[in-house]
Length: 332
Image 1 (cartoon, rainbow, N blue to C red):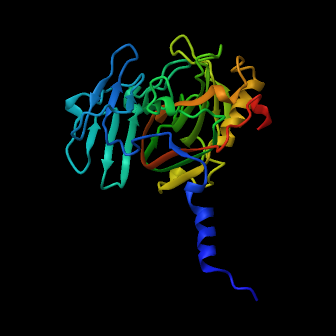
Image 2: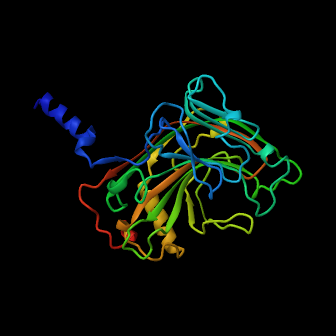
Image 3: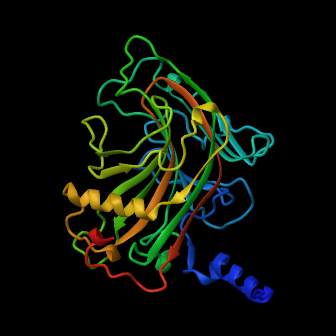
């Protein structure tokens, strides 16, 4: 019998397990614990304000977006003191950073029952959003010139742990299932950011719907983001993979659930679906496409009072050791 060399076995184990032997890793979503504060946007036409909950002068990477929502987290009247770094709470929303007792990095809540004044939203009407978002790639992304293109990546390791804190839904006369819901989502833009490309700026939405009040476990859903006279849409493809690729657990049970997986092949599928439907027509070259930015949070179109806790958000790309050939993403 030939004995294995312990030193050789140790080296082999380290070779297989140590990221240093894999491609270069690059953090795509930074400041996951929201330590640097946030910029805020109540309306698109107004310049952002800055809120800090710890001393420092480094520019925040996060922006809090409160589209079509009542209340304003910059209002001192809504500030609360306690076992957290920052808490804003009023009749319309909750926003808590580093909620120590809840074990959460962030808690976001929307009371759309109050926001809508107890009346169901009509067809085409806007709805309240409460989102945290950040730019990732150039221009103006936190990665700057080090932004990797989709051709330079071979994995995008995603992990996020969430827990539904509260969920009250009014289901009575006037409720329309296809119109009235509460959704907690994360979306990334897969965007053409090559300055020399005629399609520069064009993008699709790639997302995961963690929670939808109408479904125990969310499924894949693909559509175009069409607006109305009352609410403008982007017109871009939305490729929402849902929770099914990751877990069969129901977030509605109120337990902590970790969503973890490699998003890269799903984003390639999203690009192919976009081209199949005639979107992103100017380029099929993966070297033109980057992860432009992301947002996370609530969109509430029904009479719902909801809140979600989030912790341990991580999005890390792994670069290829050699650039991929990028004539057409359909070959991937």
